[in-house]
Length: 507
RNA sequence: GGGGCGUUAGCUCAGUCGGUAGAGCAGUUGACUUUUAAUCAAUUGGUCGAGCGUUCGAAUCGCUCACGCCCCA
Image (cartoon, rainbow, N blue to C red; front, top):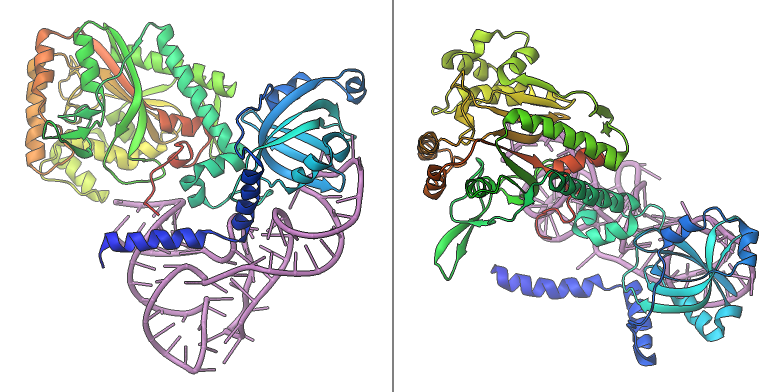
């Protein structure tokens, strides 16, 4: 059957099916509002947030409010409703929190009060009145004016259990946010984290920049890109997999300290740790080394944990990671030997020996892989998951680090590290390769690997080589995955819990 | 790609051995002027994810598919 055809009829059916008794009744109520006047008023003046009032009057007891008339106006969504004949309580929720409203027929008048009783949970209302404390001590607004500002046509999820269907929480995040304090807190925390990071780099005189997301040559990482097409230019383009090569062009241009916080796109599978678009910070500092970056990273994460959590002890899924301790620094090969007591240095020092180890571990080894790549596969398989406390892994093979500066004493490895916390890669940094001729050779090697069948290998970027040929100062740069960091700091098991609208298969 | 689990009222969930659908919340009606998931009484609401099959009979058993969650690659 033809897809367009079925889609058309399906959409119509869905709309009819989606209607039910509850929605129909609310539509009727809205219809009555339309007849009575302006159904969507926009003249309510909200002066206070619920949480601000709760905090400001925290100390004052019930009698105090009898002597002091505090007039307020608040607005928000009706979350709970308790009608008791001629008086009612509702709990409204605004962006800051919740506050209770007391409505009496005596104060509102019969007409408004009768209409108030027909308002539903989910409706958005504006309330004016005077603060008091109830017998049980809850701060409450005694309403003398009440206005329905927006009629909600759809019933909210169950008031006690909330929305627990994961799929619906991701697909209809707005509903998840209405119902779940926890979800709101996670995203408030995410905002604080990003804000702290931005401030951290601004304070150190880094300049925030924006570089292309649409790229003709997708560079800066080894990953499969999303492809698109520019009609006017009639060229294929790619969504960026990393901003790296552009940021380093800026260092060539003389911006010594730059950073960018933005989205990268990688055309790969979805999992609890992978979303096709994710947020990274990349930062570059001229005249710095990868050692400096490790120090900066420790400062950043420690300060961040204190700022957003108030402690350096980060609890994640039942484990506790202490950001106060100096982060371990250990090389790729040392870490392999540390976590594989049956191996000795010779087992991973030559191509043939390493291949044998890899095959033993059940790793599928491609013909074109060199020793460095195989070491990394062994690392991924046997070490990564075990790096729970913050750990810098150093001395990455040049073979898997096409943009990193070669080590002065050992040209098999680079001046590079990755940071692992909770068994996950959080950051990746290195002293930058600023030798244009070496970079050109490494690109060529990548192209050869692409030809050999590695569709994640890099393209040759001639303009980037040209930029390096003008001279890039000695520089170090790093990328940190924001989503994974937010997962850690909010104790979220899935990346979908820290991305407002995670990618899902269309309904 | 492979495996496990799930999909029942707007929401949260039951559903026995295969005998034709249940609760709580929400809604509606009534009572109730300081409640706290308000309470009390009555009551509406279902293409049991979709399709095919087995059967006299399927939410239930089998197969296929869709979507989701988790684990593995």
